[in-house]
View 1 (cartoon, helix red, strand yellow):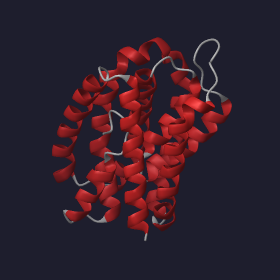
View 2 (cartoon, rainbow, N blue to C red):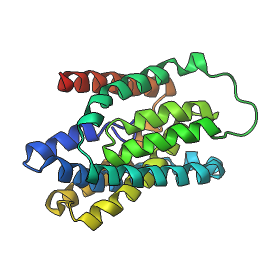
View 3 (cartoon, helix red, strand yellow):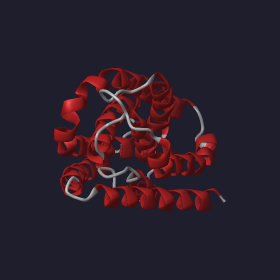
Length: 230
């Protein structure tokens, strides 16, 4: 799920809570495992990202800063406010992504990340450091407006940014010693394999099919989180 669109945390985080891990340590443990998984996904799509790596530098810096702030907020504040926002964020991101072919004009020149995208990416990274479920779909919605030549390039860029966000957020969690390594290590191994082979598989899927899968995942996650919020 994370390699094609994101949303894997919608499964892995609840699984940790059901296994008896308290919510905040479960979130930190999930972040540690998913960080390794995003490395696999980024590696699988790197051939699509490499021609456009120039546009990564500024957005990586913004993403890392936002993720650090989000992780610190998780350690300092309750999650109730973000829990209420999650379904609305997912609904917005999925709607934008689904409508993006109608909203985006043909891009002239090299792909670029515009100023407003950097601002929105910062807040997505804050959310990613704080919780992160559905973060991938939010980033796909932002990247849709960057003029990248294919869905694979867009998805690969999203995976690279996920590596930066999850990796930076992991630093405060490690310092606070709230990662449960009993769960994080086996989850990280399977997440790495799933991310890499998932990326390899979906690079061969026709783009209209891949877009449909992304939208379906987004709709499903939105419904799940609205039901959870009731």
